[in-house]
Length: 318
Ligand code: GFB
View 1 (cartoon, rainbow, N blue to C red):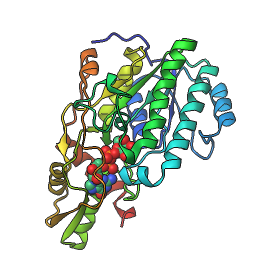
View 2 (cartoon, protein in one colour; view 1 turned 45 degrees about the horizontal axis):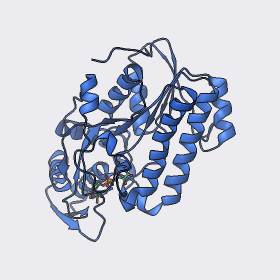
View 3 (spheres, protein in one colour; view 1 turned 90 degrees about the vertical axis):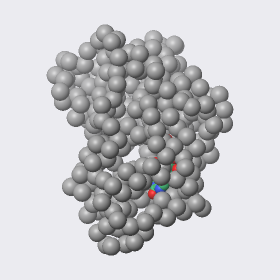
């Protein structure tokens, strides 16, 4: 296993985006380390504002920063709000990365997204397949912002010698996910739709697309563990893929969600809705080689996610 080269114990660690699914999982994970966790709410600091972000970082003086703040969403949100996905994310990452350099942050970890790889990249997708082909049109805006973030970390490492690294997670799910159907990813969408149908006795639930696309899913608590692992044990220019290493079709996923929720009706495939990328499976050889592996299997993770939904979000979704 890679040795610890940057222990977080005793450090001031800023989690940008601590209210989101990823940021809150990182905060939960950091609680088992003896470090000081710094967070700031939206109302106090809009990370899209350069002066405010740079001043906040200069005052807070963190030793380490996890960039978990981003404007995120599923296939529909990406396709219908291109300006927000591109502008918000470019500003958030640019301000945090430059602000961190100015504030003398010793280590920063930036998060990409699996849509950064070409639409028809050979599978599984290795880190060096970045920028080898055209992007998937439904999420090209988000992908371009995220590619810029990875490149910013690499450029700051080369020009300024900053120890800024980037990780590249696969599709994520878990506690704290977004269940608003206009913004959500497929797992929360299917949980919310089948749960609602079960309660109201609705006979049929709509699944977007053909059900044929394949996706790899990682529980956000596994992701948080991998992020802490990389922060403490990795320092190089290449981004590092974080995934489970296997994928399922959307139809297979739907069957698993139906089972988890206990929905007894039928599924209808709305084929006029977009499929997005045909397949997105990450090559996780680099991270496995460092000595890290995930532990939460999809069926178990879905039970956990469903429980969280029932306890925290079900009454807010129609
Ligand atoms: O999770 P999802 O929105 O993200 O969709 P992507 C995955 C697949 O599930 C697509 C299908 O083929 C969808 O058509 N799907 C079926 C549904 N039913 C539903 C539903 O009710 N809601 C949703 N959302 N999907 C996103 C990118 O792509 O993945 C982002 O747009 C980001 O930029 C993220 O990269 C990780 O995997 O297609």
